[in-house]
Every structure is written in C-alpha cells, then in structure tokens.
Amino acid sequence: MRKTWTMEERLRGQNQRAKQAGARHDLTMEQWLETLEYFNHRCAYCGGKYEVIEHYLPVHKAGTTVSNCIPACSRCNASKDAKNHNLSFYQNERVLAFIESKGVKIAFHFHDYKAIREDYVILYCEGCGSRLHAPGLAIEDAKDYIAEFFKNTGFAHEV
Image (cartoon, rainbow, N blue to C red; front, side, top):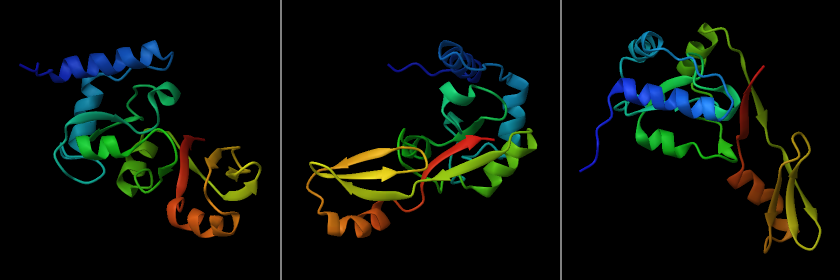
C-alpha cells in the first residue's frame, strides 16, 4: 500500500531536497498555505487539481522558497522537462505575477538555433551555447525542423 504524505511531510521533503542541492530551503508552512490560497488550491498552470509542490525554476538554481514554489497537477509538473522546454508554461501571466509579487523578476532566454555541419548536422544556439546533435537531418531541412520543433524554447531565469 502506498503511503499518503501529509502536507507538512511534503514541504519538509522539498526543503530537504533544496538543502541537499546547496540551494535556499526556507519555504514555511504559512507561506505555502498563502500560496495555495492565491491559486485557490488549484494547479497554477492549468487550474486542475493541485497535487504537488512545483519548483518554477529548477530546485538546484532557485531552491525551495516562497518565490519559486507553486501548486501544480502531476501532468503539468511532468510536462516541464529538464531541457529545451516550451516556454509557454513559464509565460503563464498569473504565475509570473505571483513570483514578481515576491520580489523576484524573471527573464527568458529564447533559443535561436542555427544549423551547422560537422560530421552531421548540429543545432547551435549562439546565445547560450546549447548544442543539439541531429544525425540524419539534412542541412537544407534544418530551418523548417527548427521552426516546427523548437519554437518558443529556451529557459527562464532570475534577473
């Protein structure tokens, strides 16, 4: 049988996770309850059922803090992968307003990939140095490929 974690245990676990990552870990229960109230105990992204404490920016970068933690459903939480996200999750106006109300300004880096040819095609973003290997992609098809699969990708970061 699977254990059901209390809200206090979840919060403690997320603070411990940030501590182990060497990041800030000072989210209190009072702050978390205020955050839940702000989002009406719903997923901050889609408005669905709140299930997890979501770190807006990766926990190792921004920690478990009142300005980095928001409620999310499992589906939205899983949709934010570690690399090359579609930034539409991060551009949620209500989430940004909440984070900025906590004194944190968020900026975005949008990947602007160009195709370069070595032994095979590599997609390269001059802005951040991100390199994606694309063996099998023809150099003449790269521009359309980038437009289709990497539109609005990049990362969010604190300013």
